[in-house]
Length: 116
Image 1 (cartoon, rainbow, N blue to C red):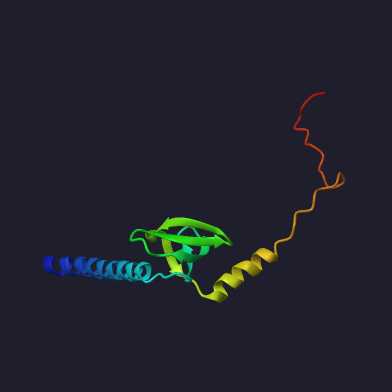
Image 2 (image 1 turned 120 degrees about the vertical axis):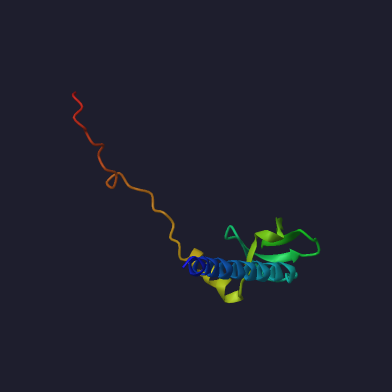
């Protein structure tokens, strides 16, 4: 009975360790394959274009025209297709400007039992 219990506990641990090792290898391959011109997304959600990938531990990303920032390679989450970035830009274009409240829209302050 005891050996069966050990097998039931060991198999899921072994499988999860293999899965994690495979994911780490894929991430390492992605970070090593980056080249100037690749569209990427960082772990913090920043989209940009690889400007310089010649350093071993860091990478330069152009986040806007003429704005280049240096990141650790480990901060790169994924390469992004052109269509993914276009969707993000379209969403930002749809944001409406806030309209200032008029005096008619401002609510009266609540009187919470304060005596006058």
